[in-house]
Length: 115
Image (cartoon, rainbow, N blue to C red; front, top):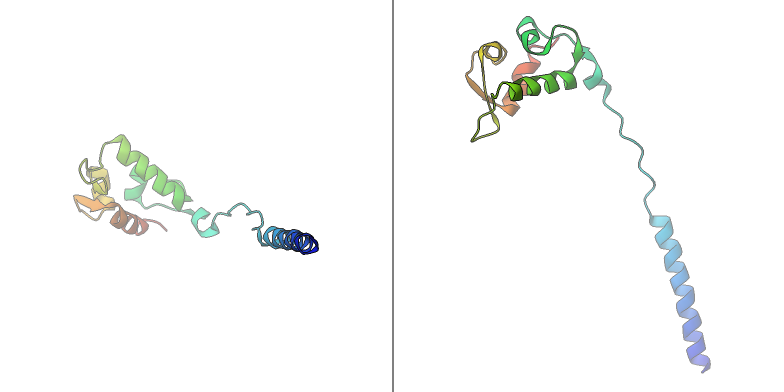
């Protein structure tokens, strides 16, 4: 019986050690993610881009939001391939005269119109 009692006591001690180790290894609370200051800096859109997003200086993130709002409002997204954007008269100037661009190329072309 002494052996059983010794084994039981050893198991209890082992469990307590494991619990302490697990508690210490738990991750700390995450802090809120901060916005990158470069994205929040107001930029001046060119005259052609201003026809779509407005002429006042706004952050890059807001330029993208307004551009997508304009695209969705006017139904310029291709129905079969949603990544493709059809250019209307206002967007052709922004897209460098192209009739259709993909969404990744669009951000590259728009960045040329920001100062």
